[in-house]
Length: 240
Ligand code: MLT
Image (cartoon, rainbow, N blue to C red):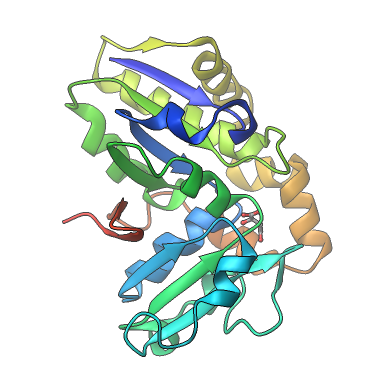
């Protein structure tokens, strides 16, 4: 099995993903929030890559129970129902609803990978379930890290590296590309203490400076959800 890691979406285009199996990661905070929202009963998440599209889609586009979530500069966007905090996506707020979701980096990475044959989402919160899914997987796969503003972000690379490391514990046929080896190495250097990782990572520091302490705490939890979002027919739902 060969694993490649795309450390920033800037290095690939949409067509790169045709025929590929892909796992998308945006630990802070988009994929963590999407996993939390689906776990709290959201019907589906529709990830969008541009704000223009969100504004075009009206409240009843997806059957009358559509809300909008996401962020710009970490903050809720004017006219949106929710921001990008996993803690906002409570069962009371979102159960049964379709959520059109836009974030600066996360949903751009997800939509960039939309032509993958299979596209899954991961964060620290569902990592072990992804490990189990790929423990016996036959074939190669890609990990796309959302990064930040076309740069690499430490926490996404470390999360990718943790997946690689845990897979290496259960199978001995894993071949890594150089970027995957970089992610794996970063995991060994920075991945043993996730709160400490968020203390030094740029995006972690920024979220703290903006008061999102509880989000940071939530995003640092390892394997608290045993489900994997999968992208199909333009939306994300949990894999059965
Ligand atoms: C993003 O997609 O850029 C992030 O999820 C930003 C954030 O933390 O709100």
